[in-house]
Length: 261
Image 1 (cartoon, rainbow, N blue to C red):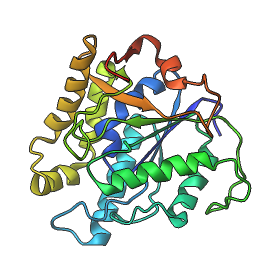
Image 2: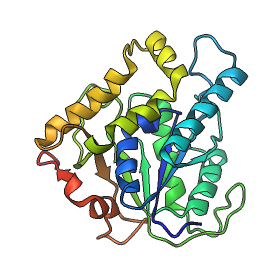
Image 3: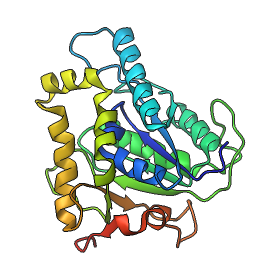
Image 4: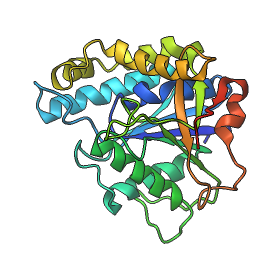
């Protein structure tokens, strides 16, 4: 394992990282952090034309290509789309990755996103991080427990709103303007998803949606042209109270949100 500090993104589907996370990860990478990316589901339902085997192979290749482009470590999915449940079968496999990577930061999805796979992936990620040091929490494949501190951060949900259409405010914003081109290049690797989202959700202009989210969050800062937003989870069960490695690492590229309560 590298001696670099490590950030692990745990999300539902291939391309979720690129939409809401990749800029922050790239900003950490520029400061010497090692990037690890895991989509818990394999993308099996992200198509209007392919059978399961075909689309899973496509989406695996797309995720690997995005990681290779950015110099990130790719970790394989553990279940199909719509089968991301907060149960031990899924948690135990994600826990194995957490223990392998030993991240200082876990980035995951919002507790209040627009679809259940996103919400369940968030819950799985939190539980896997929480039980990383429990010797009787047996993961698959087996890995020894770890006692390292880890800090969990939740992204702003897709659409920048909760399932009831209420605007979600982050605790703080990360400037991603310096890495927007790479964020877009990573998203562009997921070519099958532009086609699928155009058909299924009317997300015409794949780039425009992602860039639009980043530009709106940047506008809210009054400082950055493009940003990603984050909420830090309670330290209880995860780390010392004062730990805030994401803000510490990124310094002036972080803007606090005065609307956060």
